[in-house]
Length: 227
Ligand code: SF4
Image 1 (cartoon, rainbow, N blue to C red):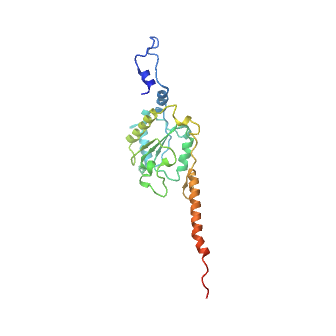
Image 2 (cartoon, rainbow, N blue to C red):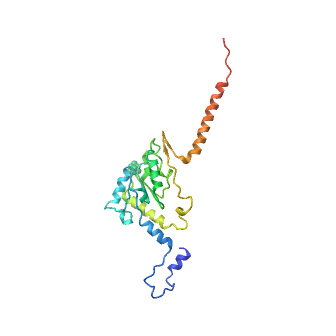
Image 3 (cartoon, rainbow, N blue to C red):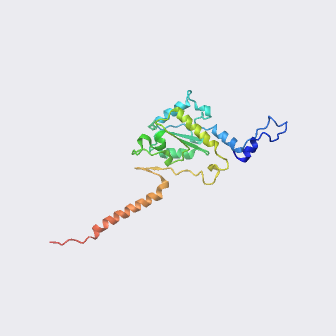
């Protein structure tokens, strides 16, 4: 507990009689975090089997509206939490990154299940990526294939605890240059992340140089004796 918080929690701080029962003293951080943690709006989208568990969690038996998350938004521009629920195929990655960029700050990402967290049973498959965190930042990972609704609820509570520990003076979304959009990957014969373009260029140049070196001795070889 910080020294200011300790001071505020001290019951011996004098409060005049007319203000007693009328004044609520707290810190800006507590109010700021309390309002965000209890009004997260998930984006309405699912990727594969894990999405069925997410839908279950939203329904009456488990009901994540108890945590202030009942308003699933069909538009990324109105959502502040992305639950990546399912297998992340290379074909879907550009769309996921584009949707993430469209979400307003502050925004959070939950990787639900083995596929979204690290590729799951399809890891190293020709058409899937080994976790959505290769492309967008993830706040909470939920293990399981699929995670149960209870596990998803636990992940959402973990996210709330993470938000509780944030400070308005430290959060990145008020800092210049910290909320730049992530370059959208390009889907061609394979998925290309534009952030890796310098490395890809360097590797291509190295491969081209190696090919030229391999071809040169054959060209320079002296012609054999003719009969
Ligand atoms: S983690 Fe399992 S249940 Fe979830 S999308 Fe992957 S294969 Fe399906």
